[in-house]
Length: 278
Image 1 (cartoon, helix red, strand yellow):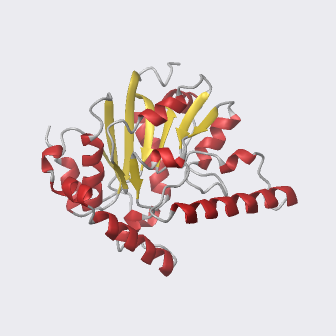
Image 2 (cartoon, rainbow, N blue to C red):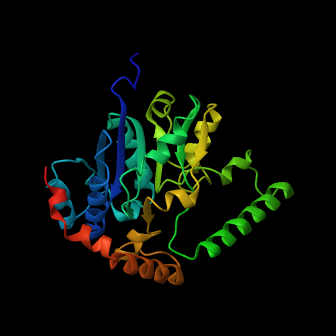
């Protein structure tokens, strides 16, 4: 049997972005990737999950991406089709490294992938790198939430309220933008799809990597936040077809997305169609 990773190109990086009907957001995301990635041997895959609007025509017009179309997918399959999109992408990619990305991530600096490479190349058993949540809230408020969340998780762990085997569950790369070694995932037949209650983005694949003896390494949030912006739930904020379950969360997502979309550097990307050309 041939090695499933033999098609990989050393040092090439594949960025894989699931998409569904967010024309404005995906164009800014892709243009930001292209503008700030000249130093890398980069392959960009976009996996479209059944878009029925002009966003699909836009993606088809881009000569510098690889588009995987899945016309049978619908919004009712979300979020499962996000994870299966990455499964499809990693089996089609040519990169030694595979980056999962959300369409509401915008790149800000040219060396944005250096942080991921720094961590993932720290040792042969490191198979993933990334950071915890980025957000547009006050850094102090975010720190408080993280500390309180960690304390609650530790109390539950010691009291047996959660039957999980590793405290590492609080220290895994979040999948809005995370890098993985393609080889181990293909060789062991791993999947990005959650199993049972493993529903948090990035945890399912990290747990499988840990079970096979691999390590995951974290990038400090303060470092990554200089390189890129993640509009948490940004696609829900601009798509009426899949709003968040809680109205307060939906309003916050809409406010974050609206504020970011009006920043000058984002406006420049929105109008720079030269980045779409071959």
